[in-house]
Image (cartoon, rainbow, N blue to C red; front, side, top):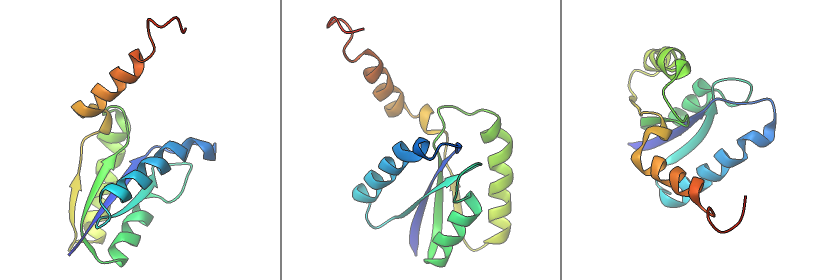
Length: 126
């Protein structure tokens, strides 16, 4: 059984907004080449979560993790994403779905952000 990973982000009108997520996807593919990984967006960009999920299922994924690429658990992750996950579970009942917590709530991400925030402080740079 193949494993899949969907990096689920909000989306934006400006296509450049997705560039950091594309970089993260490339890094994920380097770190875990045996896992099929895709980006998906809630709105304004493609592919949608259902489209990305369907592509992974078509490639033989029987276990798919959905990683919200949000800093915290707000309204989209409390309301919109659970409804989307229910739809996916109904559409693909043989797939094992894992909904992960917001990436920004991971201790390693919080640590990395804190380090980035203070990087360069005290060296005279604004």
